[in-house]
Length: 65
Image 1: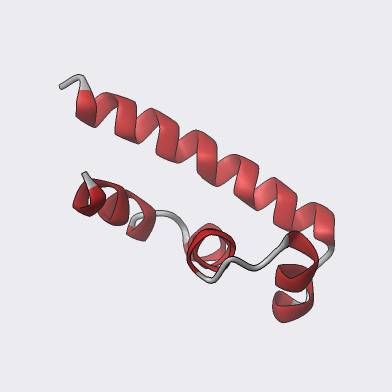
Image 2 (image 1 turned 135 degrees about the vertical axis):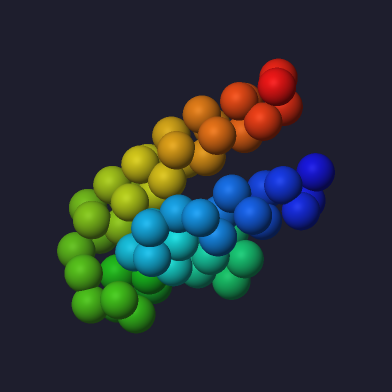
């Protein structure tokens, strides 16, 4: 299962992938990620939301295949 999730994250577009990795793997909060990437907090939230949607769809497909 971990390998499946890891592979799904690695297939995300780079901007989303970096944001997801910082949030979940590095345990950074939205403000910290915004500072690190020099982007607004709203952009961080948007990227996380979009990435979660992509991952949800991909992982549901893979689990029920």
